Image (cartoon, rainbow, N blue to C red; front, side):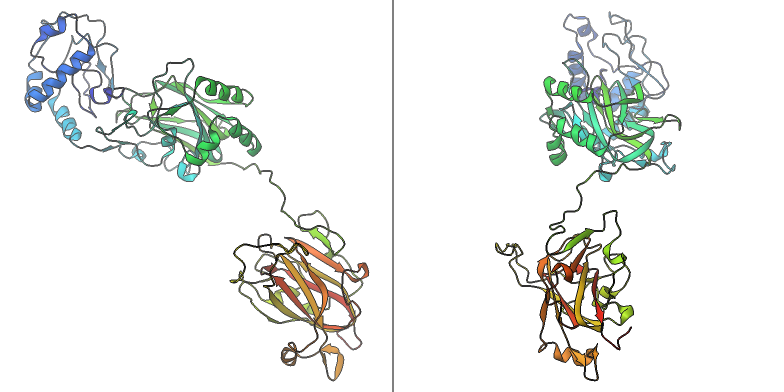
Length: 563
């Protein structure tokens, strides 16, 4: 199995998490019949098999006691070209098992501790913050899946999916966990490469950021870690990223479903990805750098970038040379200015036409309500207008509608709750083109003065109401005047009693509305019905519900009014 070395480290016997001393060589366990090693059938497999048998036959503590007394140099006729060695920070496996001369003594205390660790089926690395130079610097890890970072492409994920690189938790290792592909590893591990080239993956960072350094963790990848890596970066616009994702084999499916262990791209697919990258400017951020195996003493690799060398990036390319595994990568950064996405403008179901003029607040123009007009705004609160009553005021009251200024936000208007009886599936009336439902909410506004000569203009403003504007509106009027002064509307208390019996007539027929726009209905363009009839009150009905920012009713004021 490719991961046998995780537990043997390619010497006759070794325990996971072996903590080497400061010696320059390692003593093997005692072998009962050294002559077996001199036979032509000697191989690493036979040696490992032999040590495994000894492990089952001899008590572990007894063998450790014998190791310090055993010297095999005089008994073994073996080549001495390669000797497994250790360093202060960890152990490097030799390329041959045919030399165990020049050995020193094992420290049985170290192995007793390692044996105790091996009894537990699970292993989790110690906390990183004890040694990480990036902690406490105010940096953000933009290679975190929890923050939105994603793997867009990986050449090979046979032993472990590349998504594991972006986990926040410490790498986990279970020495007894195996699956169909082999040893279960917590990281990204590709299979042993047998085709030309090297493995790589593309990482979408959680945000556009200035990279301050990298942290690469090879925890538990001891005999199967990546020998060397490099990191490249790209600063892409949203449009460039979209083109790249659509061109990368399997990237769309990966974004939806994630990576799958036990898979890999064909040489043709990898070439297609390489050809796609040739049109994208990828620059080196970390040149080819060797990695150490994932023992506790050597697993963490820190690469701080000088301020002058830090770059702004949206994507990284992690290159393996040539294959293997890495447990985690953390990309420490500070936020950078985002590049705005080009998105489609706000959808508007209507435009300026025969029934009204529609002016979006997104247009670079002076809004109609801010332009001079020959007739006064009779509905304005400053001119005596009032909000009288309404069917629903869940999110705003009608008096907001008669303010002279533009709406500040969505809360500065009249908005109703979603109608509880609205149809589950909306259907369109083929004759009117409107939603085939009479459900509505309404409010009544009193003008500051009776429009004795009729209404000349009505302006309905849906500023800020982009996802909750009414589907359509109906504007009606009536004339209820004071008994002692026909130029003034009837007082609100008396008018409320008269509304049900009052003669309401149409001013603006039911018609579609647009989001975040001013809708202007001019009598001189034939857009206001019954324009010659006196009006004291206006009733606005919205279908089926929603919000309106302002209602402005213009006309000639009667004699003796606020003028």
